[in-house]
Amino acid sequence: MGSRGKQPPLWIGVPLGVVVMLLFGYLAYQNWSNDHALKDRGKETTAEVVQVAASRKHKRDTVRFTTEDGRQVESLIGQGDSAPDGELHVGDRIPIVYDPQNPSDDVSDARARENHSVAIFLLIPTVICALVVAFWSWKLFQQRRSSRVAGVGDR
Image (cartoon, rainbow, N blue to C red):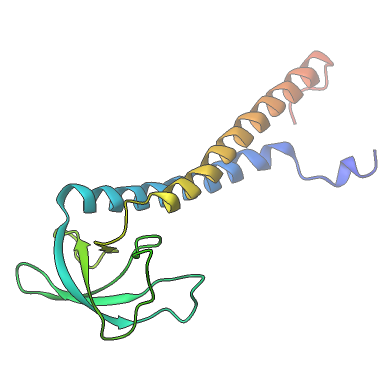
């Protein structure tokens, strides 16, 4: 019983869980939206690799390209949107797909297959948070109901 008194109140978990769920949900939505923007209205062009990620584990290479309306833009290749075959080097010229409405957003290597793994990866904690918030809310409801029945009242 002594350790029970040191636990934070159950109600703290509900708003905290909602905030975490909204954060992961927003990130998943942003990633998914960018993927669909590239698919729906993306334009293909050739880009020059200007920076290669230092870590192969977190591959986020930077490319420079010219948009249809003549603007020079630098952008990152999206996570999981690099061609599977390869190592890029500064100065390489590669085909990319960019969003003409937001050319500085992440681009995709045109040789890469369609990939939503990052959005799906972000959706998993969103769903888990939603389930945890629902469980905590149910537990909180049960706790308050049992305290009312016992005549203790709300805290």
